Each structure stands twice: as structure tokens, then as C-alpha cells.
Image (cartoon, rainbow, N blue to C red):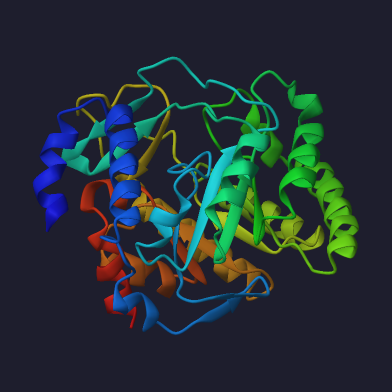
Length: 337
């Protein structure tokens, strides 16, 4: 109810400034004890995915808390798990502003943020300070100035740094806002990257005496044949989950709207149908060999249930939270309970 009042004020501001103010306000409310998980979040049956026990299947997607600076407040909303990042080995400013655009008529966002973050050391410091004990995914990527031929070095470095504090690690090879990044979804490049990461995971896992799950986040802009090839590669290289999907380069559903021509990835309601199709295709192809985490266009209880029915074991939200506010968590958990 409160968000219905504050949203027009926030939407009158630059989107990135509104994002920062919203998180700062949420932090303050949580410290004052004004934000607590809704009872509904504890009524949903827990489920085991990637060998981890999730208290409920609704998670926060990467991108909202890039530097893991707001974990306690976000956890207090009732999410079953939180994914932070994308983080790169070294700090980087990302692309020039403006780089985030609202399309309210379509309940959509376009971003070309470019992996802006404070670097892996800052993220780890924030995680330690948070004292968080829930399921935490850490999403990693390469620095913008690392040649694509050396991308594996960045992913290995980032994985080595974050694995000790991560419940699972997500490999982001699908952002459209880092030059050439999506090339890593090609068969040869993907096998080389994931093979190296799997070997490092086993090495780090032996030292920690636990299995460190790896999820791979893919783009929606892939053909069925490409999806099939990626699915088999993920299984063959011993990955633990696939996250479908990242933002899209398509502008279907937003044609003619203000900002629709901006460069970057489109998220929100127009992505829903394609994400459902990709999740359903992967679930059919994988047949239980690998869990699918569904994200893209989830903005209410019905779309959350549709994603799970399509074959997702877990779901994540981001843009829906911007348009619907924190009450979306309670709405979805109530429906699933």
C-alpha cells in the first residue's frame, strides 16, 4: 500500500537515482524494524535444488544489488534466496549515464548498465558485514576491458574469490551490455569456459569440503538449436543449473513507446512470453538432468505460477519488483502457499 503512494514520486526521478533512493530507504526501514518477512514466505514448502534447501522458490535476480550492499533489507522482504552482482574482478564504472530507462506503459525497463560495480573485494566486504545466513548466489562476469579471448581468466579469478561466501555461483555470459560477452554462449567457447570452472570448483570444493553449485545464465535471444546445444554442454560439463533468461535485444511489445529505441537489454512484462518459452524448451530437453531457474516478466502470482508450471524449479524477479513494489513477494508467496 505504501509503495502505491511513493511510486509516482520515485518515477518522477531519474531511474538510477530512484533506484539508489529506494534501496537507501529500504535499508533505513529495515534497521528501524519496519520491514519483516511476510508470514506467507514461511508457508511455502521448502524445496531442494542444486543440493541446497530453499525455504521458498522465489528469489531476487542479480542486478538490483550489484555490490551486495543491501542484503539484510532485501532478505527481510521474504525472498527464499538472493542473488547479488554481477561483480567483476576489478571495479568498473559501467557505461555512461543515462543507462536505465522506464517504459511504464509496458511495465518494462531497458538498461545498458555495463556491469557497473565496486569490484569483488568490495562485494565480499559487504557480504561479510551483512551477517546473512540465507541462500546467497553471487553472479560473476568479466571486466569490460578484458579481451574476450582472456575472459576465462576473469571468471576463474572471480570464482576463486567469491566461492567461500557463495551458496552458489552464477556465470553471466548473456548480458548484452558488455561487448562480445554473448560469444561465450557458443559451443566451443562455452565448453572451454565451463570445463575450466568445473575443475576449479572441484579444487575449491575439496578445500571447503562441500560442493559449490554453478548456475549459468543465458540469453532469451537464442534459437531452439542453440538452446539444445547449450543444454547438452551444461550437462556434459557438470553444471548445476541454468538460469533463463537474461534481458533481450528484441523490442517486440514496446514498439513506438518512448525510450524503446534505446540501446540495451529489455526486461519486464514484454519478456514474459519468451522467457516462458525458453524455460519450457529447456525443461523438456533436460528432463530433470539439470534444474531450470526461471526469470523474466514475472510480475504477479499468475506469472510466477506459470513459470513454475513451465518447468522452473525456482523463480526470480527484478523488474516486477520495480513496478509492483515489495508487496509482490507476499502476493506470490501467498499464491504458492
